[in-house]
Figure 1 (cartoon, rainbow, N blue to C red):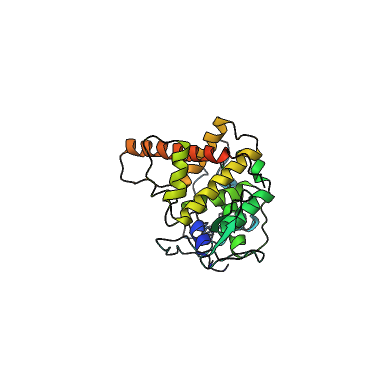
Figure 2: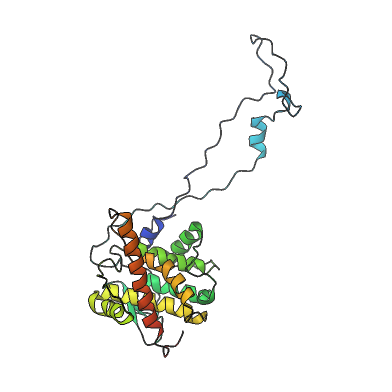
Length: 291
């Protein structure tokens, strides 16, 4: 299998456990049925087991090794973690011919019609895949994760422009979450949260205080969550909104690892509330059609 040349996909694949490069074959034991050499001591009487058997009933490992079929194994991808630029999103190499890719590897994508955002092309392709697999109406989308092996296969197929074989909408949804966690600068790591947060104040922070690349990507994520809630008919269900926010929000920010546990809990609750209020502000614009 060839080395992936796509930094973004390489970063994602590096988060999944690797299967072993080979399956060790147990060294063949001597056939227990062979006659002992003449110089060997006289063999003692067989020891009776609790089940009534004895040493004579043991199966020869040599014969067992020949009868068992060879187990298949997967050769792991040979990957390395890329050196990301500190102030930019990773460049995406994969692309569709019908869209124009800009010099920085970003493309315009509209989750909601009339609201384009510049995002990495890989996310655009994952969204198209999610929609084609009816992921917008799939129960527990983004709340549950797909198996690592299926995610890795899907990323490899995307990176090599191969036909996508998965039929599980959880696969592209999981790929989107993993991608956001591998960004060199987590989207909302630089946000200063106000003491008294409101829908308007949270929305203004996103639109006014963030640089364009982070702003567009965060708004794209909010649009995607909003479309999932609208399509499933849960946009007015506060329980569903908060449940999806709690699942999605941790992919958008990072916390200082050295902070005391109470501070980490407080920051987590604050940022979850920030995303919830920004999402509700987004949902209030009922004139935006669902794709």
